Length: 86
Image (cartoon, rainbow, N blue to C red; front, side, top):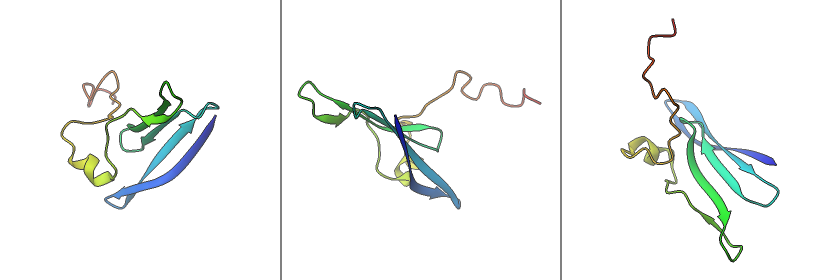
């Protein structure tokens, strides 16, 4: 298993990185540090050619304007416990 980290963009002066996890077969999953949005999953088709099976965007600005929350990883509480952890 290999993990790569790259710069993806900035929001209000804060860096957003993209992490890519790659297994020994070459399959990979990429996500950004903005809500752990999954931006890419590369997996082989029946001919062994790797294809991205995730619908997503190329820039941080496009994710910020996205009203569909493409690739968003939402936890089991989804913000319903705000203010209860005090």
